[in-house]
Length: 189
Image 1 (spheres, rainbow, N blue to C red):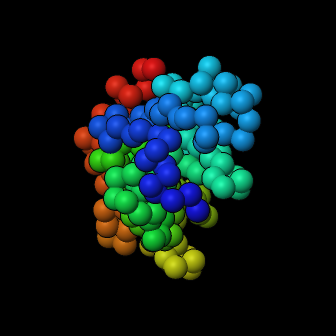
Image 2 (image 1 turned 30 degrees about the vertical axis):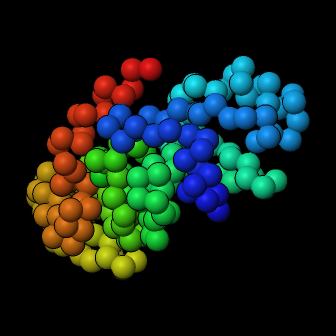
C-alpha cells in the first residue's frame, strides 16, 4: 500500500468538499524527464479524480517505488484524515459513491456496507399468490420472511422497519439528510 506520508506529498484533500488536488512535485519523483514534464503540464495543481468511474467511485492509479496501486478516493480521504488506512470498509453514508466529504465517510463492516448499498425502493418485497405481496430481509446471508401483505406499499413498509431495526444507522432508509443534500455543491466543477 502507498504510505500515508507519501500521499500527503502528492495530493491535497479538502474534507468539507471531498475534492482532491494533485500537488506539484520535483523532478526526482519521476522516472524520466518526459513523465515529469507531462505531470507538470497536465496534472500539477489540477483536481484529482474529477469524475467517477464506471463503478461510481472516484479512483486513480498511484505509482510508488515502481509499483502501481489502484486507490479509490474514499480510501485516500480516510488515510489523509486519520493517518492510516481503514481496517475494514469505508461506507458512504448517503449512498453516493462519488461523495467523498469526510462527513459522508465512516468505517463499516462488510455487512453494514452492503446494507447501506441497497438502492431499490421495492427491495425486500415480491409478488405472492393471490395478488398479495411478501416481505423479506437478508440477515447474515439468510432470507428471513417478514409476512404477507395486501399491497406492495405495506410489504415495503415491513421491509423498511426490519431494515431499520437490523441495520441501524446503516439502513439505507436512515441516511442522514444533511449528508444527502450537501454534496450538490461539490458537483459543480
